[in-house]
Length: 500
Image: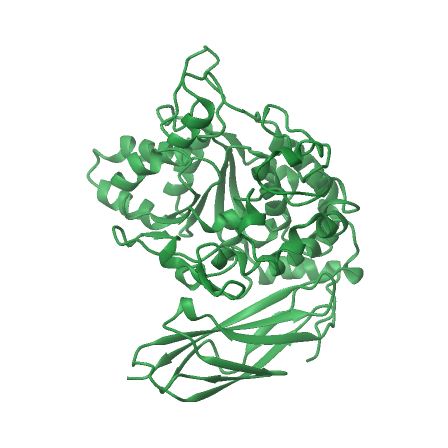
């Protein structure tokens, strides 16, 4: 294939001014409780902030982290796990403060000029800092008070921009719940309340990592049942603290210190130097439970053995990875699966997508259905992609790697008959002139079963099963990995539907 030429600054300017209007990017607001895994997620988030339009960065609370009201008011968690761990009648819990995003944005400002060499869409640190707000932080699940953060979310949900608002709950959903409660209080007595409720329900999408307070169960679900919710309660664990227990052995090297230290943390500028890892000597202010930086304390845990610079946790990264378009076409339909996991509609509410046993994928290393594998199967590609972006913080364009663009000549939606052999013509462009190696495979769990796929260079042959039924679909993932380092992979999804 003929490679694209590397972008000059002038080309970057024109691509921004003409080809990439902000209105085409997906809007998102982050709510975060500031745990150390939120910090690491935020660093990755910043290196992907060219892929979406950030419209809010809001401090919130959770079952793990809350500030207290400053009056010594005691509080007992509604969540059994937290209550058992920390006891009852606490006046605050592991609160990391409301300064840490600003500190990270100051480091981001230092690498921002270099990031612009690689993509003109990276927002400035000043723009992102203007979006930092404080939401409902006094107690776990507190949603009685209107806060700067909750009012900001409500304003965005009510604005005239037709784009959806992708609300990420890295902690509890209480600040989001307060925003929705304010809308209900302000408009429920008006004659057009149903239209407002429908507008907000269509605009909002919530991606939540577990239930980290009770506000979804007690308020959002009952009052706003038509808001789409992507509920990750299982799959995120492979990208969180117990990763050594759930990540397939073939993927684990990309989370180990030998990879993380050399390719991400060290020598990549001030932002990546602030990334928390095992044995790095760092300590988060306000959280007495952050021990991971002390190499002598690691062996005292039940998580397993760790080495310096080993990955700790980014349990919230799946939330924003749902916005990163790598070609898997899973944003509109999370049951298709992608870097953010795979989810199926709840039996109780079709607007709520869940993981768990119903969304398990076959783990080829164990031969068993695995609730973590829909997320874990992508770890190598995600980590290499992150490492390539870490290079963007310090390297000029011509010495860094950039993702290829993958194409399928026949298109992404095909029809065929049962037993038919379908041939796909694969193509690519690569901005660095690197060759791209293809692999096509059938994502059986995303469709109605498996099909045999053979890849030969830039051709793939799909042999559909003879017993396939009319209307059955088969999801063929075309994966193209370039030969730069760190290698970057992009995809196309071809869905073949069996004809009546």
